[in-house]
Each structure stands twice: as C-alpha cells, then as structure tokens.
Length: 331
Image (cartoon, rainbow, N blue to C red; front, side):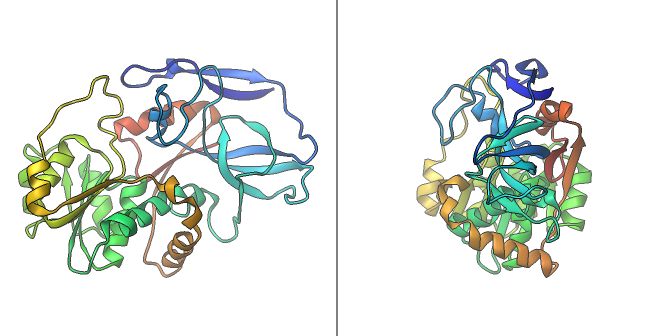
C-alpha cells in the first residue's frame, strides 16, 4: 500500500496534527509517457500555512481531503518516458505520497554527484534563489551598507545574510535563541546577532547592533520585529517583505504602528517578494549560488527529520523555531 497525507481540516490559528490525515492507497503504476517516483526528501516550509486557508493568493490553496504538496526530491523507479531513466532523481512540486506517478512536466533532474540531494531543496533550490533574488531585485545592497535579516538562522535568512557579506555589507541577524545567534555568527559570518526572545526593547536592540542604521532589511517574520526595523531604517532604506511567519497563525489582523510618515520622510521602499514571480529567471541565480558554494563563500545548515510519518510534525515544528536552516524530512 501507498501512504498519502491529506489535508483534513482548515485550521483556525496554529495548525495541529489533527488537521492532517494519513490515507492508504493502492500502489500506482505509470501509464504511457509517465514515470513512477519514490519520495526521498520532502521540504516543509512556512508558506504552506497560507495554502491551508481557502483564500486567493499567489498560489492555489490546498483542497480538503486531497493530498498536501510541497517541494520534493524523488527517485525514478519505473519509466515509460524516454526523457527519464530509472535511478535518476528529480526535484519538483509533488504530493505528500510515498509513491506517485508523473508525466515529468515541471520536474527538474538533479545530480547527487554535484551536490547533496537535500541542497536542491534548500540553498540550490527555491530557498537560495529567494534569498539572492530578493536582495538583487529589491534590496540592492551596496558595499559598506548595513543589512538586517530576521529569521536569520532559517533557510532563507541564513543564505541572505551570507550573500550580504559577499556583497560587502555589515550584516546583523535576528533569531530566537543564543544557540542560533552563535550559529549565524560562527558558521554564517554575521557580524552581530540579536536574540529577540531575550530582548525587552527591539527598537533599542537594533539601534545598538546597527549603529549606522539599517539600509536593507530582509524580513522573514513581520509583526513587531518589522516595526522595530522600520524605526531604525535609513534614508532610502529598502525592505524586502519576504515572509511573515509571526502572523501566519493569527485569526484576526493585528494592528501596529502607522509607518507612512517614516516612509515619506526617509523615502523608504518596502516591497513584497514572491520568488515564483521570477521563475523564468532561475538559471543565473542557481549558477551563482553553486559557484559561491564551490568557492567556499556560501554554506548552509539543514534540520533533517526522518520518517514519512513525521512530515506533519516537522511542518508544525517550524512555528516553534525548532529548525536551524532548511527543514527537510528524509523518507
């Protein structure tokens, strides 16, 4: 039998294991022009929370009582498609199933001899591309500027901070534990870190860590930390609105400070960023990221959970900050 994970309920507030359902299905067989895939690694990401709502967004919501999907690395174990051979690995948006068939459309081959397979879900996948393109398209960091990154020990934030260093910036990261602050400084080369969980006043903490102010803010969390960053933004500052994990489980829209005056006085740019808007431009950033890794300028961390049955829990753990770097489930 083939295990599949369905979305059972649309959660109110923080999701729980009760919102998922494990279903056993018949083992699929590939038809003409199809391949049979065995799931090897599953990416779980905060944005999946938005797809659990029945709301129009930049990507279709999940349907109730149907399989959840995310980025997956899978192995071709049977092939009726001349473009794919048994033993090859592919990366794409696939369903949370142990085995599934596909036509090959939307799948990209990945080479385990060039990089670990998990890297194609993270630093060499949408994670790394998000960090690089967000900075290049909106942040436009210049040598000598100060880059502030929230969610700095996470998959996107850790890469964004390293790219800032490559581009000659002073980089300050915000994370949720002293252990994570040590990680971003020792492994990822951040110049300074702020533990938001032990900081009473984020505005003052950012001011102290960024004495010349903030030129570019790469935001992965939103909420009060975004407010504090804006309070320290410089003239012509740029804010990359990439994620808002602090708000994803809110049942009502929280109210905060009114920033219009700051934006006008300081000519601040704040722009939402969705990497899927730039799908046709993915090749150059992937090549650049791979080159930086080969040069030793870029590294990455992964939190790998084992077991297909643990995919929902790994997803839930994102909201408790239990990941360092990319959260991946090994099946």
